Length: 83
Image 1: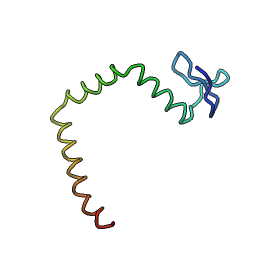
Image 2: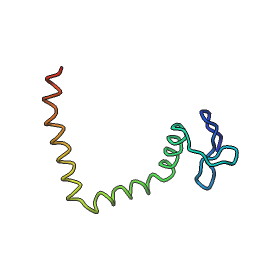
Image 3: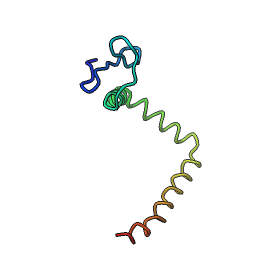
Image 4: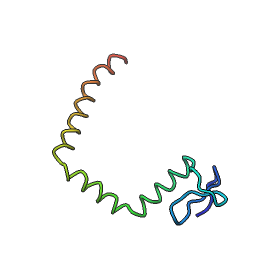
């Protein structure tokens, strides 16, 4: 992989960010780039894992989503009064 234009580190085949042979903490640009490459290379697997996690505990996940939407609806009048 080519070095990052921001910090100069490289992502090696073992899954570490290195600079001059030393393992370093990557910058935000490096992490975002590598995350997007990983997602596009493994998109089907990642989506399948997310789907399996969701449906493994379907009732709880639906309840969380209902509660989140209720909180959004409840906060909407307060936001509208500010405008």
